[in-house]
Image (cartoon, rainbow, N blue to C red):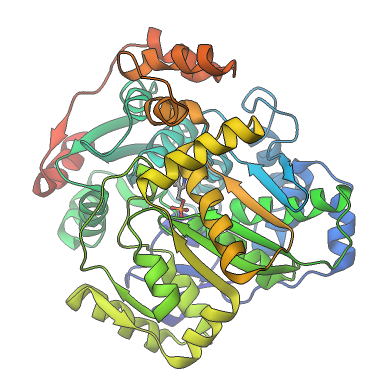
Length: 494
Ligand SMILES: *Cc1c(COP(=O)(O)O)cnc(C)c1O
């Protein structure tokens, strides 16, 4: 299986090279040249396997330059009982007769990013070997809160790697910030950026495309890569859990071949893109329901075919979805355009020039058929947390609540009551203050101390690693203006 860029189809590189590069030099996203097709027999076979073996089966279809032994080794390292606090890894909890919630936050940092970021460093480390790379890779991450921590946790002290994380100074929760600035490891660095997530992401993208900086770093023995969800090594491990969810539902009474809808709280469009790929592979999926918070750029896009980032940016209680430029949408456009790299180049040029583009009628039609977009404001998010807690005794975080709310909107508007899996992307303990307020408590104090209050109020157990944060020392204090991000990188990679 070869990979090419969404902006340049003539390129052909291996899976290992795609993972090593992160982003294509032409600014496009590296994408498999074909989507492997699976059938009922494949799903039946996987239904009898544990999560680790399901991961090997799905990933080996895309990464033909990795052996099954390698992949099994990585899956066992990534998804084990030391790192995850539940045996099923990504359990699907039944919420009601036709609704399941897939909990993706049982990993070391209590967010779904662990599902991919416990895997990516191993894929990347092997990729360096496979491609004979001698330089050290430096991973640059722009994070809206969860990716940064999950990436550092995955890369800490991995040989031949360094990792630097940029987060928006006032755009992450207290627990998220504490998780990042206390990160251990000799190869990590953290820097707050004055601005929002899009500023941090734009800064990282600019550093990536700076040829002079690239050469200087090469002389120092470094090259840059990405662990953001633009890296194919992030998307692929996420495809696994959608395939796995279907297998789990078969055990809960779903008939093989029956369609399920999938609802995903969306920011950079990575998680829902993985669901789309699972559908494209042949998993019986009906509608993909894309849930946004007040930053409703994707809702508008899915309804009108116009992507317009010229709009106010809202800082919300679901900060990991506070995004106006959803990078992974480019892969969807590439696929829906019939892999037309010229067409994609046109959209992306318009986006960077005017902050806006409008897709073709053919793409609009495909979007209407396969997707449904909705958004949920702050009050509705709180109300949904309260409703889930009070009526169903199920405590969910702010991001998950956005998905639960949008799913309800979808059902009301369309009358479609197909069995639906919605993704739960973070532990409620990562967003204690908002969750406490939502269930009618008054948060007392701030930051990590609120973990105990939420525990006392609900009886839910604090994830072990979050409970341990209180005793950890702050290691990082750096803040940079957007324009100063380059020099922060240069001084880290001396
Ligand atoms: C990253 C994140 C999201 C958004 O996922 P995308 O892949 O960026 O769409 C949603 N919820 C949580 C908790 C996250 O950390």
